[in-house]
Image (cartoon, rainbow, N blue to C red; front, side, top):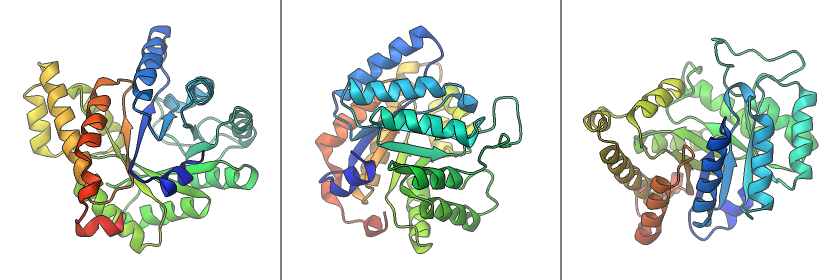
Length: 303
């Protein structure tokens, strides 16, 4: 089923999980175990990313088809412009279509490791909006796109970022999923600005449960997300106690998600880092708490 239809017909907020293709057989074994564990939570959909520079393209395709056809999960494949010609992109899209996949998130992608400037390959594409337009012209996938509550690192200002985002929506993106963030005000303000700009598709917040301080710093350095100083200080004070970091990370993410859902967010997309316990605990708590039944925040109408 298409993700835009899932969100449009859902009677409760959606919960979705993102995984990344591992580099080793052991990693793949752990990933498959995590996916099977989280599948018990009956997510609305799941997604698989590419590795750096599109290096795990074929593994992404294999895993997304396995999740769809063997586990019965609605699955979305990441597709980036990195290192691929239009012909190669269409070959991947053909494979996904023939494998029964209905959902693709169209991304420009990051520069390959060791390169400081993003450049398309000859015969390739330069922007996520171009990829969305290619898919729209030749396929019947539901297209998702990425957005950035704290502004894309390469955008000079919010207005430029929103113009680029609107181009992506006009090219065919029917759902937007945010980069990870830790201050809900960034999401609320971004969504309000997007609505004022004429962007009216669902904007699903992307949340990561912090389980490792060093990993958090690496990720936020790469993507530009800001960690509120009090949270970072609290995490750093527990850095030598992994269980304490996990406990705080789960508690913080649960509170963050509860506020988002109480304020009308259409769902939560979890960046799982291929681990199941933290995400499983948060989703289970939210389903017990049901914060979406206590909406009343004025921002609810904007998200």
